[in-house]
Figure 1 (tube, rainbow, N blue to C red):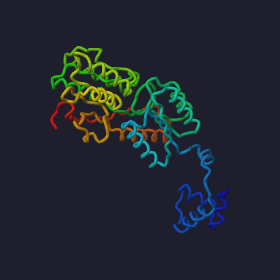
Figure 2: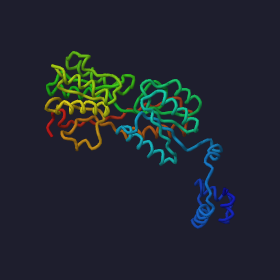
Figure 3: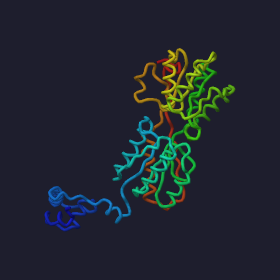
Figure 4: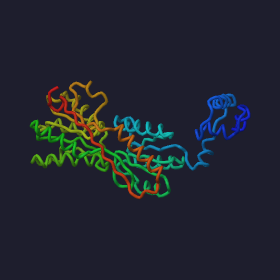
Length: 334
């Protein structure tokens, strides 16, 4: 296996010059750099990144744990994290928790065993928060993303309660009083906050809460479809439905489609997160769109700040504002 000495001898330079070319630690003349790069290719030299990391006490890698990277919002968050990480010279290691606390814990252990420089986590509903706190105490900085609270750490997410409150009041203004909430697991902070916004809006409108219209559970599409089917087959069915996530929205729309119900003719509909290219849907869906990419990039910026100064005792909590777009599905004109 070729070594840095072999590269230096072939290029006719010192090993320190080769190191400067590899690590960018000092300017190197253009012709010298070219000779070193040609020697690297000719010898097949590869850096021992593990040994280098041990010398620097850094691996230039970041661990990211989300529940489901296929969900549009999380996919955009991952893109935001990766863009900032790459710009700072870090490699991103991604793990899916699948909303499973055990899988999340395994991912946490696997990433810390690989000595990532820091972690960004969108915690599951019943996350092992104590383990996260222990990770920080052992010296690995951590940032919470999207799902906030439970751990003293830097965190970034979106405003949840106020936008849901506004959407429900918008439906009330359209004349709806039997408004269902397609929810999920209340142990997930975003779901709990969005449910609270729904409840606050009903209270403000003077509408009594009908618990049978508040669909809580796993929040997975199949479960929401089953719950919504039961609602839609009642004699007195809801005239409007709001969903807390893309996953819940899929369940609602599948149930409606199977029963031949159309929005907004048979029920008004709006959702948090929504779908990519929402304007291509017919009718177009009213949506609360969170700035997912910015959430991811902000999470990485917070982590980079913590890596630069791990002595700070205060933690930052950032809430970004989503954008509400009312379209035909809630009864608004095109």
